[in-house]
Image (cartoon, rainbow, N blue to C red):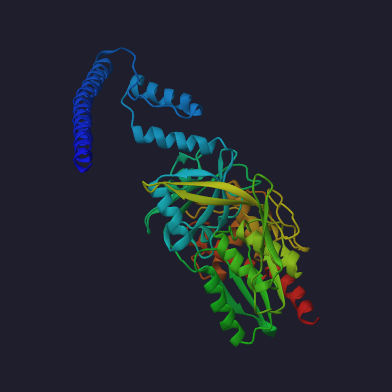
Length: 500
C-alpha cells in the first residue's frame, strides 16, 4: 500500500516537472519576442524623427515651431507668432513679441488700471510702495490716450513745480506721450536724482501747453504728517497708502495725543491711494468694531464685506478733507468713516476709483497688474467715475489752480501770453494791483512786478524770470496754505463736533 502510494507520488512529481519546463520554455519565448518588439519600436521612433527633421529642414512654408494646440482659442495667436518669426523682413525678438502680446491683451481691456510692466517697470512699481524712489513724485494715469496727473506727492519736486491734479502731460523731453501706457510714461519721467526732465503741461482751461523743467529727487518714504493747531485741534495729512503708513499714523497720533489732541482734522487731499491692507488698518482706527468698512464684489456678483477690527472704540471727534485728487484707498477710508461712523466730509468731490487691482509677477520679474473686483461703500454705493460727494462742499480759490510759470521764460513789457496772465492773477491774489489780467505785459504790470520784487528784497528789474518767478509762485503757495478755506471749514465743523 505504501509502495503504491510512493509510485503515484513519483508520477505526479514527474508531471509537475514537465509542466514547469514547459512554462519556462514559454517564458523564454516571450522574453525573446519582447526584445525583438522593443527594438522594432526604437527603430520606428528613430526613423520618424529623421523624417520629421528632414521635412523641417527642407520643406517649404513650414512653421518654425509646431505647437500642440490643446486650447484652440490660441490658434490665431500661434499663427501670428509663427508668421512673424518666419516671414517678417527682419529677425524678430522672440521675447519682445511675447511681451507685446501680453501687453496687447491688457490694453484691449480698455482699463487704465490694468497694464503689463517690464522687469524695470515692475521693480519701480514695487519700490514706490515700499521705499523711497527717484523721480518727480507724481501719481499719473492714462485716459483716452493721454497721460494725466492724479496728484503730486507732498513735498515732491512735482508739487514744488506747481503740478496739479488733472494736468495733462503732453510730452517728456520733447517726446509725445499720446498713446502711451502709464508704465511707458513713468519710464520716461523717472530718472536719477539731480537730473532734469522737461514736461509739457496743459492745464484745464489753458489754451496751449507750458514747458516745466523739474529736477528729479529722492521721493521721501514718509506718508503721514501731523501738527498741533489751536484749541487742542490736530491736523494730520496722509499722502498715500504704502507699507508702513498705518504704523506711521499710529505713532503720530500717539505723539499728538501727548500734546493734548482733543479733535482731529484728517487731510486726504491729493492722496492717490495705494495698498488695500493699509486702508483697512487705518479705517479700523476710526470706525467702531464690527461696522462695515467697505464691500468687494466680483464679476459673478458675489459680495464680501470687510468689517472694522477696532477694539479701542476711539471716540475722538474727527472730520475728513477730500478733493479731486483723493482716489482709491483714500476714498475707501472716506467712505468708511462717513457711512459707518458719521464723520463729516469737507472739500470737493473725490476722484472716483471704485476698482481693486492685483499685481501678478512673472518668473522673469515682469509684472501684470489687473482689475479683479469692484469695491462698494458700506451702504453698497459704487463710486467709480463719480467720486464721493462731501457733506460740506468748499471749493479752493481760483488762484489755487493757476498754471505753472516757467522760470526760464522771460516775461517783460510787450509780452503777451498765458504765462503773463497767470502772473497777473498771482500778483492780484497776493494783494498787488497789476491793473489788468488779460495776459498783456504793460507798464503797469512792470511797476507791480517791481513792487513785488522790492517786498521780497529781489533785484528790482520789472522783469519776471528766474528767482523772481520762483518767489512769486512760492509766495502764492504759502498763501494758499495759510488761507486754506477747506481747512478753515474743517476746523469750524470739528469744533461743533467737539461741543456735542
